[in-house]
Length: 262
Image (cartoon, rainbow, N blue to C red; front, side, top):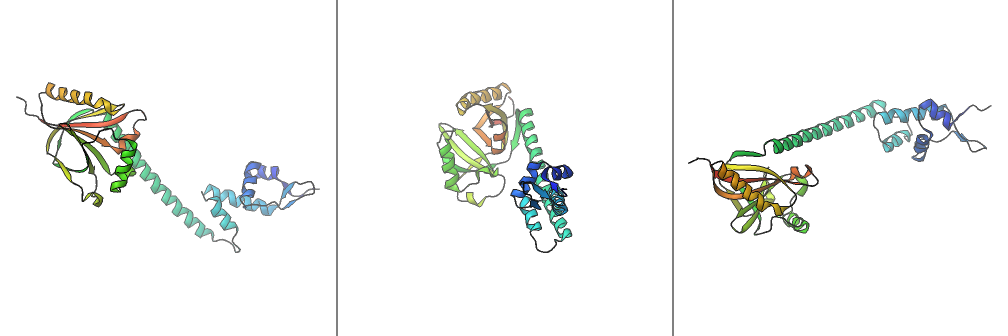
């Protein structure tokens, strides 16, 4: 009479699938007690206990590699040390999740502000921008963006910059504004946007060919409100808005105005 467990019986006791048990065997965590003359894999209390250890540690989010290292130790493991390690991993994961939640909340606020404050008047102090290119097209090609980032060793995905395009006369000036001091920009020439009130408008466009129409719209809205445009036409690109849509480009346009109505 057979006294050991088949793989199916082992799976039933441990509430696993047979494929999961085979997976653990393939990864070197478990071996059958014996294989009988008919090729059946049979398991003893020892394998049942090992499988319970594997299940317990997997519930605590230990990786397969970590569990394998524990099981392969010649001497018994220090259970409290393992729990301390798991606790540290949980603390790290909680910190990561908290940071992710903060990012979600910031993006939500940014998106809602963009949508609900489509037009507004804002006061800005004098702003110093770092010039990266003069007299270029607003719609930079992919290769031009790559070359620009490489040339100045910028962190493209770090969300540390705002891209400003200043349209003054027939010239477009491409600049960067930084949230934090960046020594990489210390040798750049600078462009100053004067302090004052700026009419700001958030827009969604499909491509940059629409900007001339937007520029005319902003001018019209300023004059209709009785404001005198006295500054450059400014286009602001924020890296954080790139995830707002896969079909639209989110921009903010600004124009300094005289708010003293005649």
